[in-house]
Image 1 (cartoon, rainbow, N blue to C red):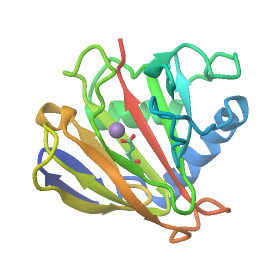
Image 2: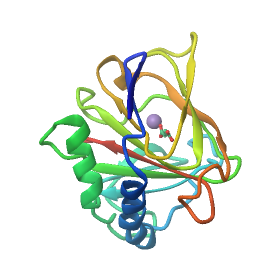
Image 3: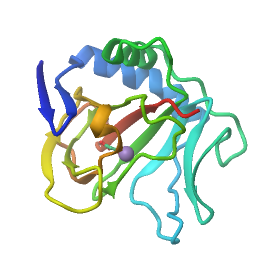
Length: 200
Ligand code: SIN
Ligand code: MN
């Protein structure tokens, strides 16, 4: 395990060992069944290349109306609860008693990516955001608190955890590409990213 600090982003390399990674996948299985991942549209009408769903009291959604948190899956059901091992991981890396309201689950299949963006649909930016990488490697790009400027990239591998707090909380970030089938954690390949956030 190595702790990197890249522009105030704390990158915990290999924070989760293979058994812990497999345990998270197991815990996520019923969540993905109850709240099947969907391909959201951006407000401008483009289909996002990642598929997503959520667990927790609130889920993050995007459609022609805009980006927002919603209490239900587009299918009409409540989001499933955030699995205990995920909550324990949040408590462990943040030291906070407050639990996250949302665990966004992004699935990157072959060719999927995520453009540079800020996480800014939450009420209070003093809470950190925690991101967990599972499965294939993803090239994570880190920018600045304002649009533009130089960026730095780091490959995130299965078991890596990133904490975005302080000045990093509102910094631009994205995923340029994945190395499809670089990991064998997910039988069909791809990358799962969990993003934990306090929303309200
Ligand atoms: C995100 O910022 O929504 C996802 C980041 C990642 O997939 O690592
Ligand atoms: Mn983000």
